[in-house]
Length: 169
Image (cartoon, rainbow, N blue to C red; front, top):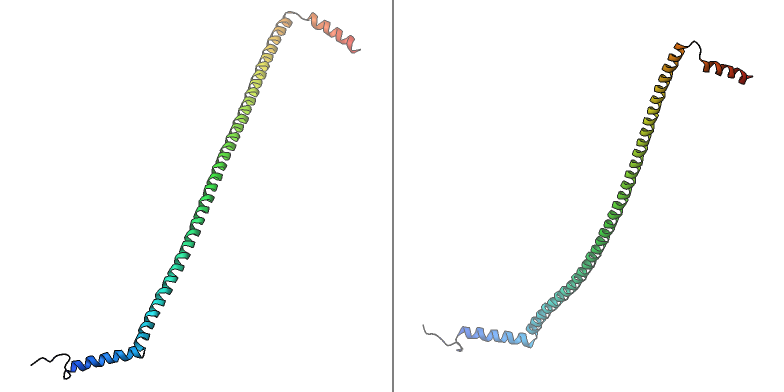
């Protein structure tokens, strides 16, 4: 088989090529192909532009939200540091108050112990005095008993009885 040239009028592929060129030529002349093609490209470009605009808007919103979050974090950190300082001040104040109360309580207990010691000393002194009085009374009783046993009457007692009679009148 002999191969025919592409541009031969007897070659069916030539006529397909001519028909295709005429078809595309008509599309260009009637502005069907360029309008549709350019319309599709314009639509695609508009869609991409809208997406870029939306992405830019979302980026700006995200940056705004990021700035808000940073501001809130800084405010929270300031509040936390303020609360920490207040807690430290309260702890220091409470420690000082507790120290003062403890010192006051120790002072009161020391005073109470001193009073109890003074009372115990006074009680001991009173007990010693009472024991001395009892001992003196017993000694006086023993002396008087011994004197009276030796004498029938005591001249001092007789003199005291006589004086008593004159004083009562």
